[in-house]
Amino acid sequence: MEGVTRSDNNMNSFADVEQSAIAPQAAVNSMLLRLTLAIFCCYLTIGIPLPVIPLYVHRDLGFSNVVVGFAVGIQFLATVLTRGYAGASADVKGPKLTVLKGSIMCSVAGATYLLGALLPFPPLGKLIALFAGRLLLGVGESMLVTGGLAWGIGLAGQQRAGQVMAWTGMAIYGALAVGSPCGLALEQHGGFVAVSLLVTLLPAIAILMVLGVQQTKPQAAVRTPFRHVIQRILRPGLALALQGVGFGSIGAFVSLYFAYQHWGHAGLALSTFGLSFVLVRAVCGGLPDRLGGFRVAWLSLLVEACGQLLLWKAHSAAMALGGAAITGFGCSLVFPALGVETVRRVAAESRGTALGAFAAFQDLSYAVTGPIAGIIATGFGYPAIFLFGAGMALLGVIIVLPQGRKPAAI
Image (cartoon, rainbow, N blue to C red; front, side, top):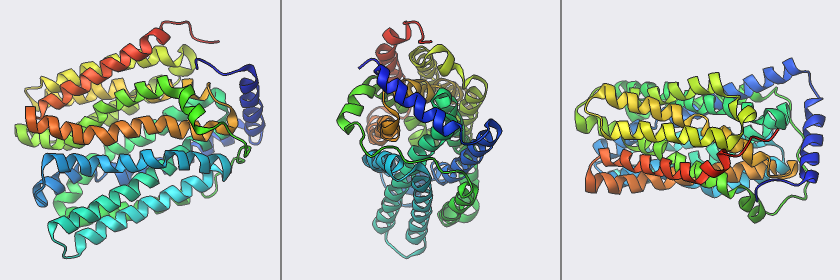
């Protein structure tokens, strides 16, 4: 469906006005900032180990590129399978409780990593422990981000949905930018044990940040059936999934790509991606609300494709870092741009479910990109992974371009 009914718009407006009237604007901005910082701290549990896990699995445990892809992607598979639950939890039980549960789950994931690294397991046993931790982390990430988005939009109102998504994205990819070099440095000095210990402790900081943030009321118990929500958001969801291939390829294999090419500073690849991502969000985060989501999305996907092509043809570390940065520029606004279109298509009482389902498209992309990229790397070499990412981004342009040419709704 291409839009929502007038009654849906009325329900959204009423719910948002009622919620945003609870606190003055300055107080809302303060709560949004605390929520954003909490998501940043908690998402470090993903960013710090992300460049370390491929090295740990391939170099230390001795498993293949395909297994590396599964080790990275299995977290996102767990996220996909639990987005519906996380969205329903945010709608019915409230997003604050959902965020707190997700934070605790991220800490438990770190403890599982730590257990596997410390105990004298054979490589297969350590791999199983790692997979278990990745699954737990996927569940935690699902609840953290779905609950955080629903909470932020409930506090700020639907008219600021794009801004809430932009801030959340800055927290997520800022954590990736900071976490990547920190994770590699920590692994060099303390091994995977040190990485696991930090992952276990960080969520406590996030919990302390949001305990005093105002809860938003759970929505009505009668909600749109999940299959109907999927039908309404299918077009933006598919485009988001295609966008995710670029980041999924970088996250899963850029460390091994740099090692294969004998380039140094592999951790900077995720950092340049994350920093450019955050820069665009900070400067241009309001564009989807003003220009229309589809219009911003197809331009962003085109930029992402250019970055992936530069990574494919890179003949130096500097060129590869430039490709990662351009990919980050392109990826930055796709989620909030298409997310604006998503929240316009559903009633307020189904917002958490819709956001969970929308984010699940990206999670599914991350989950399958790792194994597929592993197969591509084995058959055609590491550079071919990024040619694949460019092709998927261009397919996303084809999906959203017809909508992006339409005038933005006022």
